[in-house]
Structure formats: structure tokens, C-alpha cells
Amino acid sequence: MKAINLAHINETIYYEKLDNGLDVYLYPKKTAYNNYVTFTTKFGSIYNEFSYQDKTIKTPLGIAHFLEHKVFAQKNREDPSQFFAKSGALSNAYTTFKNTTYLFSGPKNIIENTLYLLDFVQDPYFSDENIESEKGIITQEIHMCDDRPTDVLYEHIRSNTLHNNHFKDSIIGDVEDINSINKKLLETCYTTFYHPSNMFLVVAGNFDENQILEAIKNNQKSKKFAKEKKIEIKKVKEKNSVVKKEQIIKLNTNISKCAYNIKVNINTFDIDKRKLNIYMYIIFGILFDDSSLFDQEAKDKQLITNSMYINILNCDTHLIISLINETNKYKELFQMIENKLKNINITLEDLERKKKVLISNEIFSFENIEIVNEMIIDSIIFDNHIEQNIIDIIKKLNIEELNSIVSKIDFDNKNTVIIEAK
Image (cartoon, rainbow, N blue to C red; front, side, top):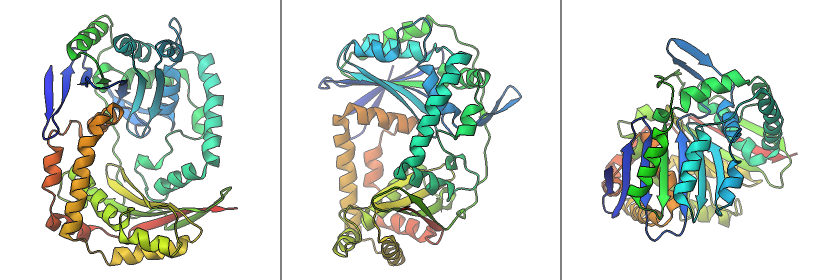
């Protein structure tokens, strides 16, 4: 078992790769009153065209999310939610663009619950009947998303910004996609992406790392898995331009929701992607967050009542930086944003203040095992490793590099999306 020591934080994450390829990450914390365990496959909504063993497979949009639902179906095993509830634990799952994660949280029986999590995810029951019945459930979910202004806003941010990049597509798919899913397609995706070598387990909470690792090893040794498939995901080229400059969508909403979006080519910058993301959060935080001069001025002018929400989506090829708020005066707000972007002046004092905030946030986050667990997932999915020296990276950020990044951003490569009341 390898110890991953996090510099300046005095925290340790343990790691071991099992014989079947499963990666196991353990974060024991004796002061934790709860446990949070996740089991993740590197299969998300963007992986709908892939190949292995000279076979090329193209699947309907939304199949990763559909599969997430069906993995909970069991034939000769207790229903997962009922099993976990017996020890006061809650179970759930979610699908993102790049992964599907199954989880439970609860204060007791961590070994028993972890083994059950492995068992039910690694032995789902697919049938024509339960697949057909699920289509109706997911169709209802799609219709609910179509009626939620915030969901519609985010969908159009991506689809109006990206041409070919699969991040433009809905994670859940549409009704036509869902109706074309069948048992064979689900089994193909499951056997391809749910192999232990394409998955990882993260255990965070109050436990003995040696004891739980031994139990996990024994659990995996008792199972047989098909031969690992070498998966190749189809890569697409993405234009630098946005798809649509502006769109106003009419929905039932009390107040308009609006997003000002900037599309940035990651390859424009000769810098590590994690470091680039940190710089972008700092830059747009200094310019627009609740401690900024912009925030105070926009509130004084009664353009906004809530502070700007800054969302940075890493789409592998590009970043989509979105400035999101609720206001019926979105035209004035957009003009104010553009004026700010034309006159960027970030000082060394601004940078140093944000660095202190980031460092304190990094340290404080280890008080919450759920946040630590999600940080590990994020690191594995996007960086394929856990950064041991994140504090040093933040400390070494400098104003020259920051200003160089600002100078390379094409602020004219933008669009706006507005959800307006009918």
C-alpha cells in the first residue's frame, strides 16, 4: 500500500492497485463521525463512440446515465437502498460527462457496506422488461429537466458554445435516444467500461486502512472478470468559435436567468491544465466574485441582488467560462461585464489575497470527508493522479504568469444565453 502524503496539509491518502486492475484509494480520518464511499467507472456521457478489438461502437446519447439507473437492478440480491438503510446509510449515484459514480454514506458498518457496494455494482441484472420500464422513468426525468430554467440554461450554454465536442450533448439524452436503448447495448457498455481496470474505489471515513483493504482484496479475488478491453475513445476536433452568439428562451420563470460565456482554447496556454484552471478561477474571481468591486457596483445599480456565479467547465479541448445570474436587466449587466473585461487590472495584492483564500480552503476542505472523496474523484478523472503539492503550486502562482494568461484570452469569443419569462 502506497502512502500519498500531501505536502503542507499533513494528510495522507493510501493507494493500491489490485491484481484485477481496480484502483483503491483510502482516506482514514479518526475524527470523522461518518463514512463516505464511492465506486466510480470512467464512463460518462461523452463516451458514446468508442472502439475495442477492431469493433467500433456508437451508442445513443444518455446511455451512461441509463446504465447508472439499471445497475441498481438486482436479481438475487437485496435492493441496494434497503440494504444500506438497515445500517442508517444512504445510497445514491450520479453520471457526469466523464464518469459514473455509485456511493453510500453512513456512520456504521463501513466494511460490510463497502463490500455490498462492490457486489451490487459488479453484478447488475439486465432484462428486456426492466429496461423497457426504465425508459418511462427517464423520459419523465427528461421532461422535468426541460421545464427547469436552470437546467435549460446550462444545456444551451454548452450547445451554443461547442460545435463537435461531446460536452455539448445532454448527459441524460433525449426521448428518441432513450427509446433506442436495448439490452445488448447496455451489456456492451457495461462489459467494456465496468471492468475493474477502468474503475476506482474511494473510501473516506473512520476505519482501519489495513483491515478494509484486506476485505476489499478478498472480495475481488472471489470474483471472475472478463479479459480487460483496450478502449479507444473517438477524438473530435473542436473549432475555436462559438456556435451561436445569443439566444433568448421563453420559459415559466419569475425572473430572467442569464449567462455570459467565454470560450477559451486550452492549447493557447503553455501551462499545466490544473494550474491553468486555478489561474482562471483566480482571474474571474478577482473580477466578478462577491468580494469584487464589480459585485458592489452591480448591486448598487440594482442590476443584481445575488453575487455572480462563476462556472468554469473543462471540456478537454476548451474551457467554457460562464458568468451566471438572475436579473431582468441582463442587457445592462452584460454591458457592465464587457466594460470590465476591456479594462482588466489585477494587482499583486489581488493575487496574493486570493492565494491565501485558496490555500486555506484546501486545508479546511479536509475537515469534510465527502469533499475529500470528491476531490480524489476529480483528480483521477481529470489529471489521472492525486497532486501531492497543490499548496506549493498555489504559492508559486505569480502576477507575470497571470497577466500573460489574461493577455491570451480572446474575450470576443463569447455568447449569451437568457431564460426569459413567457
